[in-house]
Image (cartoon, rainbow, N blue to C red; front, side, top):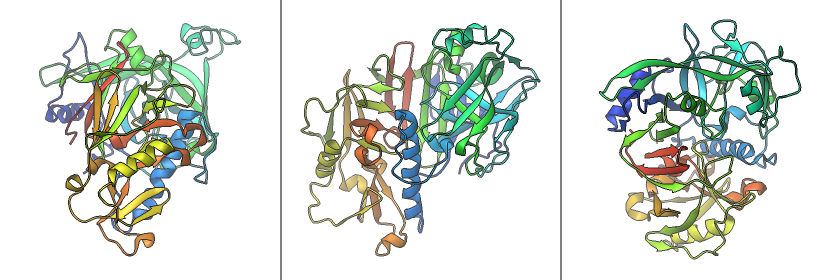
Length: 453
C-alpha cells in the first residue's frame, strides 16, 4: 500500500531504511538525510487498463526525453504535463516554523524550486490527492540579490546585468515549451539525519532555492500537480551541493526504488553498507552518463559494432531514474529482442504503441533469460525477466488474452525521439530493486541488487 499523502515524518522514512538493512554513515562525519518517496503511477496495468497504462508510460517518457535531450519533437501527440517528467515525489519542509511541500525528485535537473504565494498560473489543487502549499518568502526567507555570489554562479560565473537591489531571477524552460519563472530566496531546509544508532536527529541547513512566481504552458495543470521540483543534478546550485559545501553531508546520494509497491527512499549522504561496486561518470556531462561496454543475454554476449556505445553528441548511455522504461538504438534493440526470444521461434507477437507484446503462461523468470549490461570498471547490471516484462490485463486491443499477456519494457529509442535514437537510456525499468549510489565526490556511480520493499 502506498504511504499516506500526509506522511510527513522523515523518521518513518528512516524506519523503512532500517527495515532494508541499509547502513547509513553516522553523524556528524557523514550525516545522512533520508526522504521517503512515492511513485506517481503503478508500473503494471491491471485488468482492463492495458491500453491506457502503456500509453501513459510512453507519454511520460516522451516528455522526459524532451527534457533530457532538449528536444521538441514529441511524436506521441498532444501537449503533456512537464510534471510527469519524473516518477517520484516526496514531502520536504522549509522555513521556521516549517511548512511542508510536495516536490518531484528529479535526477535530471539541478535546483530546488517551489511555487510562491500569489504565483501567476500555479495550480491550487492536485489530482494526486495531496494538499498543495505555496511558499511565502516574507516568512523566514530572504531574497537573493542580483549582486550576490550565488546569482553569478547560476549565470555562468558572470553577474547578470541588473542592479544590486534587484532579486536574482531564474527561468527554466522544459522540452515542450512550458516554463517556470521566479527569483531565488534563502531559507532553512528542515530534515532528519541518521545518527548511526537506529535513531534520527532533527537538523536544518540554510539553502538557496527558486521561488516560482509564474508558470507557463501546461506546468500549471491540476492533473498531477506538485509544489515544485527537488533536483539531484551535479551543479553547485543543487541542494546536495549546497549541503556538501556547508559540510552537512558528503556529496553523495542514493536511492532504492520499489516499482511493485510504488515507493522507496532517496538518501543524501554516505551509505556504509552494503558496499557497491562503481563505474566512472563520463566527465563534463549534464546528466549521469556512463560508459557501457557490452550487453549479454543468458550469458551470451551480443555481437554489436565496436562503436555502438561510444559517447558523444546525442550518443552514449544515461542512467535516469525519472524515465520509466529503457531505450536502445535500433540495431541494439533488434539484436537484443532476437536473443531474448531465441527459443520461441513460433511465438505470436503483437505490436501495440511500439511495445512488443505476447502471450505466455508460467513463470517468466523460468522462461526467459537475464539481461546483463557491462560497464567500465567491471561493473554489471542484471535485469531480470520480471523487471523487463510487463504483465498487463486485457484491454480492447487485447480481447483474446487475459493476465497471461506481457509486453517488453525495452523500446527502440529511434521511435521515441530522433535526437536520442543513438543513445542508451536506462530508466526505472533496470534500476528497480537496486540500491543505486551516486558518489559525486569521486565522480562514480554504482549499484547492487537489493530488496527495496
